[in-house]
Image 1 (cartoon, helix red, strand yellow):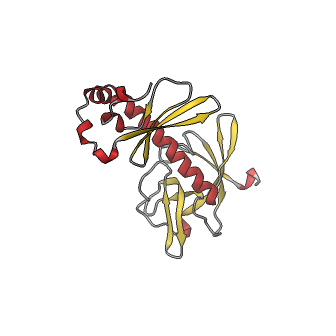
Image 2 (tube, rainbow, N blue to C red):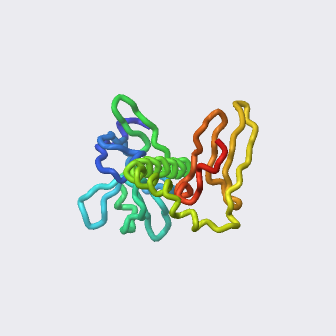
Image 3 (cartoon, rainbow, N blue to C red):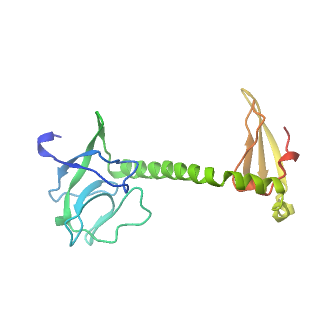
Length: 202
């Protein structure tokens, strides 16, 4: 791809995080009416507006093109037509590095991975806010009576190269583990609220 054949645009806004982060410099290949694939990142002009947006293609057919930002939950409300498309993004410059931006199936997978990572970051930050309250509630045992008898916790042991790993199962569902060589149990939320951790093997 020749740099001379591209347009450049500074990306701003949060809707494409973590794939794009302001102020990434976008290298845009002008759109000339070719086929757009689901997963491609395109720059377009919002219908009826002078605003330019960079989002990922969610569908493209004879009716039009649907898009969504990687960090957004909902598809954009407008249906784009070919004359709304400015071009597609294949490279960005971030800091001193030039990064390849993938479209198609690889782009879709990249978006899913990015959303999962973003959700993990949000979950971690929200968890930090509620961590003290969660642990106070779990220590009271107030919710343990909600556990049906048929879901009595069972502990299974597995031999690992580094020692014995213990896994905690409710019914058929694994809800916790004590990795080999460690003394602390890792319990998935919200099961700590309904389990008697003192009864588990240490």
